[in-house]
Image (cartoon, rainbow over all chains, first blue to last red; front, side, top):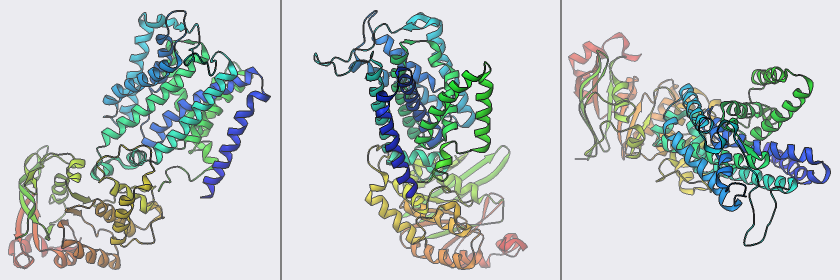
Length: 318
Length: 252
């Protein structure tokens, strides 16, 4: 397909530009790009649910925030966490939390699913907000970035903003490729069939609950991965990283960029964060501008920004 | 005599105070086409919904090859070898014809929890999908998006999907609904071919097709069985004549 080839070329160009970025841009822009890439991974994980499985979650920040908190919780006080153990811990912890929440949430449909995911995420939020775990409502600083030493060799330093940028870039590329492969797999096809017609999937013999739960768990794990690097970059964690405000923002990124295309989630994350910056520079009431933009996109670009480039991509498989 | 694939005993379903299906018993053997006919509202769709697991019965039993499957969910019943088509076309409109049949065939894998190889690399699944598409007369249309097909072709996709699951028992809810004469004739010929090595329970309003296909007929009126037997017996039954066949709605 021609659109596929064009997309591949575009992807390679963007990737080369991203690799070259630290050579040409200053610290501010490298850190901004790091943040965009982290949010892009987060948005892709939500797109797996919203755009591919048809599960509109309004509690996805719970897994991002949980992954972030595990960076802080894995570290002894005033010391660094071990990167090689804390990263799997954060991803695995977020996956477990997602499996537990998903076990109840994916039994519900439509607006009830939205409500249940929101409610569970708020429960997680208040656990961290109202108890002494990791500093309560103030959150906690990550005094020292995770230590990446491996048998005495330190391959990269997460406190160095360029190193962190390249690590995050590698994580982003890996997450994108893994999600692409998974979406084309037998499992991925089942998930997309459930979005289009869950009833028919059941009558064809697919126990849909199982597949939705696995999709929810994978999405939670990838969100936890994003959260881990979010905490490493920010140097602190606080309950807002679990809150419904962030859940809403990431959902807007997915809608803005275009649901059901991973590239859309990436474009959405970039557009959202850049628009936020531009609008903040223009006016104190920047959220009004942001809201207006989202409404206009929803009205006039039902397939999001990515829909401009690939108008027929969504749902076209097989 | 051939094996009894489907045995239904005193099956009932109430919706509130309304008995949509009441005490229906019937059998369907391997190689047999069993047609259920009756006027609108007779309970035919409710019956088929109970047989496919879309709707749990209020009482009674459903046995598949001797195994009690009453109240099992639709996915379990499907995996026991029951293929169902729907009266209202129930397909994946944004997907291609091939993907519709392919996903149906994929349902026969022991598990679809496979994450790292492309779904389209499953050769046995692809072949099953291609066979089903050919059997339903859709060869050459594999790449078309189902939403772009005519109503008749979408009905054929419905049948292709049902066949792709390689069922023993076919539950066909008005397979000819909305088809033109030519498409109907082709589907009737297909069903005649399939009848040899399947058990088939058919709900259909097209009486010419029913009498061409059916070995056994069950006539339902108001949720109960009015008469059951060979086509000759049904044709000559005075009760059926009065209630249904002779009436104005014979071909609705």
